[in-house]
Image (cartoon, rainbow over all chains, first blue to last red; front, side, top):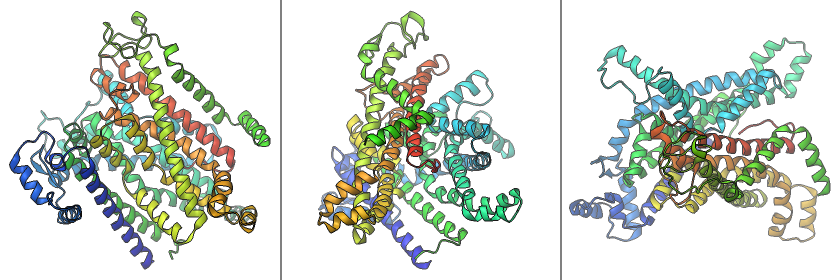
Length: 321
Length: 281
């Protein structure tokens, strides 16, 4: 177990290192002068360009440049966004909360509904409910999230007028306290539903197939032979074993979830990392782009390791070498 | 081979998913290849009728904000989607099969190194990597294909590795080894051909993923401006969503149908390989 934890940590560190390398290589090899890329393509300020050249040692040899790049990252310096005139880390920290709020709410709903529906589908597999749910899950799996978002806006805000089209709060409301919370929740309904709809098929299929797999195992047949009630077998033995795969995919689904929220935030003008990323693309703000990538890579690696460790605690069968 | 074909025909009879998927695929391919024949207008030309509703003035699906015919654009857009999906998935299949095959068949230190490489790749958020590369190096359609292909192979590598590990213990592989056949030859003549089927099924599903990624990149403004892409069409209609919903809605429906087609074929193939296996992404 100890060895396993150490091994996972080492892999995590390696992932971060690889991401830093990729970042370095990308900035170095992108068409054009790296100083111009770091300073923002439209930024002609010679003082800033001079300062950047010294900071990243761009007048020195490649290995020296690489070392100073890593040193800056280790100090927590992920670059400076010249387009916004603020450090990258500060910009991201500001936008992190709205994104987490949106994506975690969607994740919770998607996991909950996906798993419950998957279990129900598997109990009566081949039935009407199962076939209907499978079709629905295929449909949402094939739907681009941004398009679904647009269609949901079209129906529920433009035509029916039930919900606001965009934003996180009503700017003119000036609400405080619970009114503010309620207003944010009201604005969250459409984006969260869209994100949850495109995510749920994943959890639905995992829950469904793992329940089916556990139900076909020998020990369940043995339990049936002892005359135990079907509901008791299901609740006590099948469920517990069938939920393990859902836990394992939670870590790796984080990257998937954040990618999904980029689209949703763009469509619903939600003031989070996705919108930040979108504007940094259109402004060609490379330091911000690569900073976002680096921070995401570190976060995803950390989450996957944490989930792996939790997983090894839940499932006593797993004895890591 | 003949036996396999008859088995496949039999499977088509009862596997409705595979059948529907293949029929849809044929329709899509015919539409994409025969785009110049079926198109009623020039997809690039800006007509005077701007934002006309579907069916008006002979524009079956209406026109967009610049007066381009949506129906003809859909036909040409199918080319882009299919091309990107198929080539990206093919790159991913080749890289995945080779790396997975080498890892599984050679084993030992080679396997450990490749496995660690796969683990690292799985842990990096590939979508954001694609985004940055395309944003920095330009959104040429070739880049997009290659980048999507080169970031999506780990699934295939894992599948092929598992296949190779089980195949290398089989008697026919042992026999080939005993007869002095070289390792590379065994890998290409025995291991890969016998273990390729799950990779084919998975690759079909990856076509779906690549099509969605390309549509997404185009939507974010990172599409190739020289080609017609459904993602770009959806993006163009965003501003006119309320008054002219068809500009975004119609290309989106085609993305869904196309992606669904490859999902159905992949799922159907999976069921064909092992009828007991349940869908699990």
